[in-house]
Image (cartoon, rainbow, N blue to C red; front, side, top):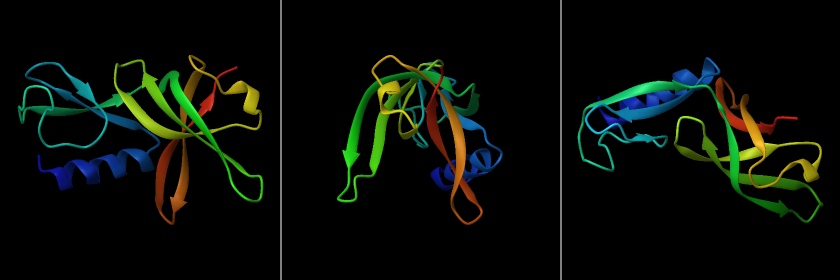
Amino acid sequence: MSLNEIIQTYYEYFNKEKLPYIKCTNCGYVFYYPRAICPKCLSKKLSIMESKGEGEIYSETKFVNEKGQVTIVGLIRLEEGFMIYANILTNRLEDVSINKKVKVEFKEVIKGQKFPFFTTIS
């Protein structure tokens, strides 16, 4: 599968509100970001898998703009073993902390295309 085909498949998963990741069928390594070659063993034997979309915050950063609006970006470690950078959506800033459980949600960012975000699990 070419990189363009993998990216297109990711977009299709997002619109179905599914979080894809890639598993190397040669060495078993799992990763999120679209690649046509395994970054561990360089094999092209890859399978696109569906994540449960649950994990925990590994790190997080809060940005405040000039209007006082807060954006939170985090590195999320998913249960399947891969990591993803994503926005964390919350109405309570105190709910966002290292090791806090999160789950994926999807929002339409551009017309006709959804993308993954994460929210904390109470």
